[in-house]
Length: 306
Image (tube, rainbow, N blue to C red; front, side, top):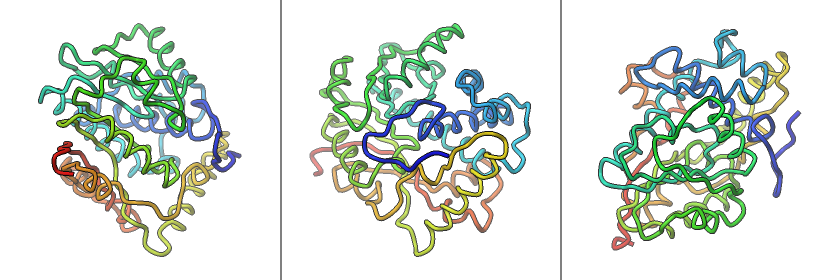
């Protein structure tokens, strides 16, 4: 069983928090097969297959139906979340931003599948073994980046700004930053430090996109842990021994949206519930309503407003 997170822990794409990136890619593969009008990630399935977690491979390839193993709400979240971040980057580059940074890039394939304008540089930041695996696997598949893809192979707990600069990042240029599905896997103080750091590296006109979870009400986190434990138990019966609840950091933390606003970011926000409605997906069930309050935020930095 996966151990709880601790300072200095390590992982690959088949273990600990790394497996969540593979699970997210499996959800994208399922979603792509179901409806390419919302999400079309042709690399999700082969990347999951290459990681080699048997259960996730069978789900990603369609050999096994999601059934109760992957609740439909998580597949629908994969649809709207992927579309949200795809549109964020395309909107930013269409507005003239030519530098993008994908934090904790995992099995994200946007550098290979989005129609980036000529001259766009896309930086991916993640642990060295994760970066190496994805780069090698996609090369073996014959995939070619659609932008100038550069990597900063570094743990976000280390000096990732230095690694980013070494890769060619220019803090004087506007940047489009994504922190997708990341903040809940950081301790509260590390979340704040990450948001402070990316703000400090951002020139005026830079853009950011991330999720902002509401402050939990009494009992909310216990329900979340119970649900994650239940899902992990179902997966364990199929040989995938992990405990998703032990990979996240719970407890009080700053909500990302007001935290960023206080640092000069002018944000737009939409709830998951509203994203479902906007994309003609079934409404959330009663036990998913708190999930529906999560905000997807994106916005622009105006340092003169600080």
